Amino acid sequence: MKRTLGAASALIVAGALAWLFYTARQIRLQSTRDEAQPADIIVVLGAAEYRGRPSPVLQARLNHALFLYLRGLAPLILTTGGAGGDPVYTEGEVGRAYLSRRGVPSEAILVEPEGESTAQSIAAVGEIMKRRNLTSCIVVSDGYHIFRVKKMLEETGIKVYGSPRPSKPEAIDNWVYLRQAVAYGLWKIGIRV
Image (cartoon, rainbow, N blue to C red; front, side):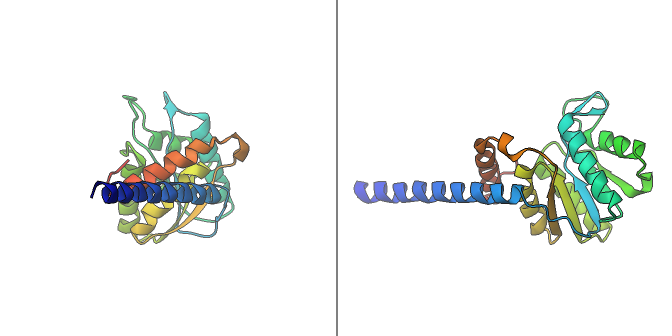
C-alpha cells in the first residue's frame, strides 16, 4: 500500500512538473509573438509609477500602445493598474495622463484604476469591455506576461491578440517564464494572483 501511494505521488509530482515546464515553454513562445491586428481596444497592463510618472517599464508599454493606436489598429486604449501603495496616483491614471500628453484624445482613453494584481485588473477589463460591447482587444505588456493575460481574457469570451512591448529577449531570465507558469497554474485552480 505504501509503495503504491509513493508511486502515485511520484507520478503526480512528475506530471505537475512536466505541465509546469511545458507551460513555461508556451509562455516563452508567446512572449516573442506580435499578433497585433485590428481590434476594438488596446489594453495596457499597468506597471510601477513614481509620483505620477511612469516607470521605464510602464513607459515602454504605453509607447507601444501609442504606436499601435497611431497605426489605427484600435480606436480606444484602456490603461490598467491601481495605486500600488501610492496615496495620490494610480498606474491607470498615470497611463492616461501620459497618453493624453502625447495627443491621444481623452475620449479615446479608458482607465481601470483599481486592480492591485493582474487577476483583479483583468477581471475589471472584462467587465469594462462587456459593458461597452467590445469583443476584441490587443494586450500590451511584457512578453512573459501576455500568455496568462490572454488566457484570462479569453475565458470571458473576448478575442485577444498579444503585442509585447519591445525588449531584448536575451535579457529575460528563464525563471520568469517558470514563475508565470506557476501563476497561471494557480489561476487555473482558482487562486487569483
